[in-house]
Length: 72
Image 1 (cartoon, one colour):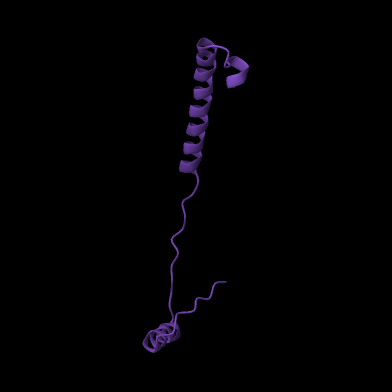
Image 2: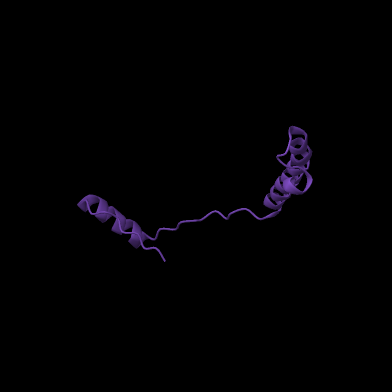
């Protein structure tokens, strides 16, 4: 956009290209902001620890062993 309308030949040519380029940048930013508002948010992750898992963690804490995570 900048190069097709303006250029670096003079200050006036630069200004002539800068205004339309900033308008395009502002429009793209607005489109991105609207898309961000329309998209659904992240779901909260619920962590459920079973009694067996809780006792396992408690035993590891008491023994000083580091907790092992199971990532699936």
